[in-house]
Image 1 (cartoon, rainbow, N blue to C red):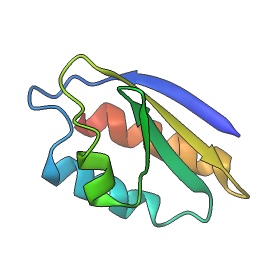
Image 2 (image 1 turned 90 degrees about the horizontal axis):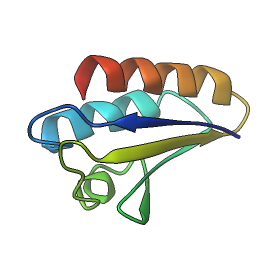
Image 3 (image 1 turned 45 degrees about the vertical axis):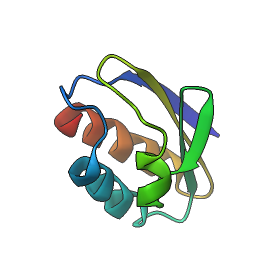
Image 4 (image 1 turned 180 degrees about the vertical axis):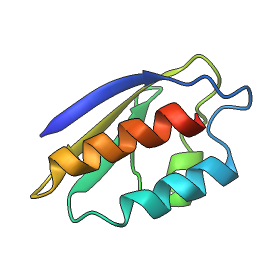
Amino acid sequence: MKEFSYIIKDEIGIHARPAGLLAKEAKAFTSKITIEANGKSADVTRLMAVMGLGVKTGAEVVIKAEGDDEDAAIAKMQEFMSANL
């Protein structure tokens, strides 16, 4: 399993547009990718579950990937978070 932490910089937090794009990116991998925030966890491929975490600006999230392509999945998630959130 691979993981990384990220502090949300987007002034709105994780809202519909970036959550949808994040889910789309995650669906390209066979690894199970989860996001943890506020003491809760969600499957990144499930848009409503990610939005349900209620992640705001300045919150720390932990992204975890486990599976055959976890290295590539984590690299892509880090790239996505830096560019969009």
